[in-house]
Amino acid sequence: MRRAAALVGVAFGFLLSWGQATSPDRIREMLLLEDPYLYLMLGSGVLVASAGVRLLRRARAHALVTGEPVAWETLRPERRHVVGSVMFGAGWAVSDACPGPIAAQLGQGVAWSLFTLAGVVIGIGLYLRTQERAQPAAAPSPARG
Amino acid sequence: MDILVERPPWFVVGPLIGLCVIGLLALVNRRLGVLGGFSAVVERATGRTDELGWRGAFLLGVVGGGLIFALLSGSFGAGGGYGWLSRSVDGALVGPILVGAGVLIGFGAKTAGGCTSGNGLSGTALGSPASFVAFASFMATAVGVSLAIEGLL
Image (cartoon, rainbow over all chains, first blue to last red; front, side, top):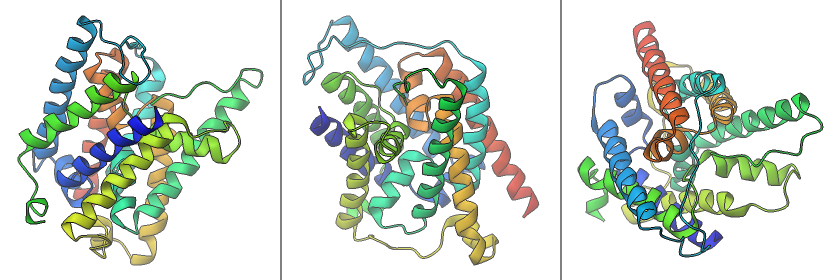
């Protein structure tokens, strides 16, 4: 399972790099609405994925490695999806990077990504600690996303 | 390799990225998301879990994909500056600003249950209403903040 996930990760990191979605300048052009490339890339990716996963589900496919029936849950929007995404969007705009590009930048030897990485690690640590303080009795939730 | 120097048309890279979402579901029945990989590393490093799991493996793959690309295109470690920050801000401030932005990314995306890949790409492809709301929220914020920064510079 880990080997399969790593393999898809390699493809994903390579494609982000090739599409220059790891370049802070390209991301800035996207966010300043100067260049539609990354929107079209993301949008066409969503369309293809959307069609593909539905075909898998309709065919009652089983995952090749885990043998599980291909299925997924959907979530109803909550306040946290808005609040968290507003924070995330602000950080994205300032750094012109988000988790996928940060990981690929690390591989590309972009030294600045070490700073963004440090921040992401601190932010995740703060979140986990806040959650555990809010519900001290609950077991650590299986984090998603 | 010259083919890697220019970016290919969006209609080549985009669908291939969509195939990554399909591939992860078809192979291991999991939702693609990079943030979860960073989270798995933090959880492992702080003793909250005792293994990196598939999310950590996926993250290492993304790092490896960036490395392979940089080696094949001959761009490893290229480029001294970092985007608008290096052009507009005192050099000593770039690092601290990136750390601060990273904290917002990590805390915010964990709160929202996903980042651009987890909510924006796969969550929307899987038709999750929460992901559409998250996607709209972070796109509107990121565009608004970027335009505001551009206006202030």
